[in-house]
Each structure stands twice: as C-alpha cells, then as structure tokens.
Image (cartoon, rainbow, N blue to C red):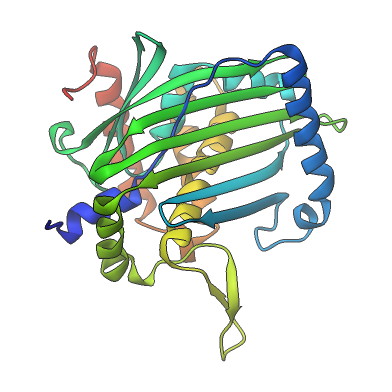
Length: 303
C-alpha cells in the first residue's frame, strides 16, 4: 500500500463527519435538553476562564481506531434565531463551504431523506473531479421550543475512513443566549491510519491543536499534536463556520456570503498557531469562485 504525502494531506485536513438519527420522543428530547443544561452548569468555570478568551470549552479524545472533538459554547444569539438558521440542509452547505477544504456542497434527496453531496479537496482552487466526493445523510433529529439536535452522517469516507458523525445540540438560556454542543468524530482502518501517519510525519509534523500538554523551557505552552491536534483544529474550524453563518443571518441577502467569508476568516485568525493556512485575499478569491460554482451546478458532481 503506497500513499503519497499530498493525498494524505488532503485526507487529514478534510475529515468531516455527519450522521442522521430517528427523532426522539418528547420525553427523550426533554431529557437531552436537561442533560445539556446540566453540562452548561458544570462548565461555568471553564467557560469563564480559558485560552480562547470567550465562553467556549474544547475537548478531544482518541482510541485505537477513532477520534472525537467536542465544543461547548455560549453564543450571543437567541435560541429562536439558532433554531431558524440551523435546521435546513441548504444552510448547512453554506456553513460547510466556509472551510478551506470544502470545494462543493449541494443538498439533494435520497431514499432515506436529505443528503449533502460534498466534495473535499486541497486548500487551493481545484477541479471538482480531483476532489473526494462524500455524501452525508442529514436529519433534524429533534426540534422543540427548548431543544434542537441536528445530525449528519457519512458511513464511508476516503482512505478507509468511516462512521463520520457531526452532532449539533442547542438549548436556550435564561439570559436570552444559546448554549451549543458541537461534536465531530470518525473512525479509521489500516489505510486511514497509514495516511494519518504519513501526514503527521510530513506536512502535519509542526501543526498543533489547542489542548495544552505542558510548558516549554521558555515558559510558553506546549500544545498537543498528532491526531488529537488534527481533530481539534477541524472541530474548531467547523464550529467557527456555524458562528460565522449565524453572524451573517441578519444581513441583507446579497451581503451574507461576503460577511460569512470575512467573519470566518477573522475568527480563525484569532488562533494563528493552530488555524492559519493562507492570507485573506487568497481565501476570499477562492471561496467566491467555489460558491459561484456551487450555485451554478444544478446536479451534484459525479461520484
């Protein structure tokens, strides 16, 4: 088995994960909402004092064949606005396209419901036929006056990866704000493990996540690397895309794309050690072209 570092790079930088689920009954929704509120109460210290300088907590975990990233955050949007903005598959395509490696996203209908047809590629202009096609099943798993849960799932990904999961949960707070939990995970087999090892030994060898593993001789924090660093970076990128989408929701329709793009780029540049990939002009030029291509494609690209 031979995997080039370039292919491994694309694979490692773009691991997303979505997943559907049958909607809960009302009592299960109420239990899920109560659990998330209890999590909010338990995270007060971490939300008020952290390296992000905002009410946000990031956690990650790794097993022998899987990795998970979780973000909990209090955001300055009322729950009704979050509910309206995040329960439509087309809106999720507008969120996912903000990521540098998402080249295309269009919702369609499958035998089991809504599907997001996504193409993942390198962090520069690239023909769709050279990108990886991944189809994510989409479902609003729960939606009540006090709780939202959206799930996306892709059973199969590139390089032997599988079981991609994205879960978004949200509950209203008494302050008029909203508390969000965003979870991102996937599993991988032998081929995926080799691809990750190639990436982490080459292009990804100096990249780090957000968890602090210790302190250097200069007194500066030493951040975690490896696969946990990788999942932490992508978890943050997708979470910040959600925030950028929400931030532009009230703008005039003709201004929303530009506001989303600039908002996302400004957000990731707050953490340059982990998230800086390119300059703003390069990013904006690339994404404007990709968005126009996305809007002009009436059919998803070939599988």
